[in-house]
Image 1 (tube, helix red, strand yellow):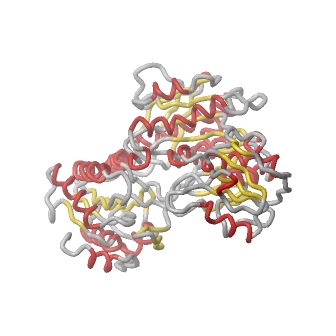
Image 2: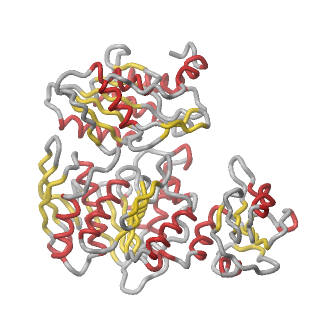
Image 3: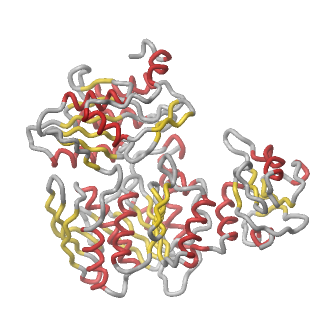
Amino acid sequence: MNFSDLLVDLPDLITPPDHDVPISAPITENAQGVEPGGVFLARQGANVDGHELILTAVENGAAAVVGERTPGKVKCPVSYAQVADGMAVLGLLAAAYYDYPSRKLTVIGVTGTDGKTTTCALAHGILAAAGLPTGLISTVSAVIGDETLATGLHVTTPPAHETQMYLARMVEAGLTHVVLEATSHGLAQGRVNGVDFDVAVLTNVTHEHLDFHGTWEQYRRDKARLFQMAATSYRKPDTPKVAVINADDPSADLFRHVSDGVDRVLTYALEPVYPVDVRVDSATYEPDSTLVKIIGPDGLKQRVKTRLVGPFNVANILAAVGAAAAVIHDDPERLRHAIFEGVSHMPAIPGRMERIDEGQDFMAIVDFAHTPNALKRALEAGRAMIPYDRRIIAIFGSAGLRDREKRRLMAEIGAELADVCILTAEDPRTESLGSILNEMAQGCINRGGVEGETFWRVMDRGRALAFGCSLARRGDLVIACGKGHEQSMCFGSIEYPWDDREALRAALRGTPLLTLPTAELKARDSGLL
């Protein structure tokens, strides 16, 4: 294709190129990683100005450049086009390069604060059980047929050009449907721009990421963008536009309002205060499974047993059933069978209430809970998994350079719902870990916690896990929250290899992982602990 072909549908093209050139490789923001014949996107980032890297990109083979500066203010020896917002157009350019792959797929987008990954996995399982060739792009991995690809160290929607590449590969593999996890960062930063959504699903909206979004209202607006995109994006033949909304969530009315223009709104709820489309008729919660009877649209009734535990996972199941009902809307029996097969046979999701067993006489779990609401739900589920007279020992932290209010909130929730809290590192980044733990300790104290009796501060996460295991008695629950499946932890600006599941296994064996740079941090933070 030609450079001009990529630009034809851009809404904010300011200055078109003065000459056209053929394009034979993808668009990228990586000046070192641009392929010969590709396009380099230059934009002003938080720490780096991509316009200063144009010559490097050209030396590496870039055939054209898209930037935000006027042509006369950049040194660019190849064809150059100016746009108003480089971050916003990256997905649109990538979609054009890959010939708009999402227009050849039925695309289900899932957003919310908690439960997105589990809901995506459930929806993917149900649709696959219905015989629909379905891909998955989550913050854990991209699943394309029999191939599973990791999508990054930390959980967020992949970059826009990678998202379009995954979608293109799905089309090439003959898939017809895809479930895509859309984080608030991904929506706000345009990582799903160029994706033509057909179904938008909301799990919930709770306190998170206000460091990035600024205000609660902006956070909700950024998530609501998914529903606006579904209502206004490209319409595919015989594919209705549907919004699936959690009626239990206080923000439900906002998402209904922004969904104006879709063909159908499906609601679901665990505790409906008015009639909804998908609900629970009955649920029996066991320590290692849940038996639930689901009532759905068009007379759907299905009883299913799942290895997922806790009411919050039943809510995720309802959301996934709503998403599947939006797609399989003309064959109730096929939908009923797919729900049974997809939910009952869904494998465990890495780092989501994942049990770790090294032969110990107490329960050990790793969960990704890294928000106040997710921690609350995980601890409530944990309480139902152990005898009433046994204890919960919760090990968690709160990330640096993120929403500071979370630190107090999570510590208060831990103090209220766990018997013992061990406060430790969780991606402190460039902040003082000691200062973060000081703020969390105050949250525990606010709820009557006593340091050295009901809560401790242990900076090294490996030692924290080992300490938690050393406190556990027969029948107790040790739950490590905040990292889940993630494969690294950030200290300063460096990502150090870390896997909570392996670390908890090591702690249970009595050989704690001590691979994080806490000795240096202790020296730097001397006096704070």
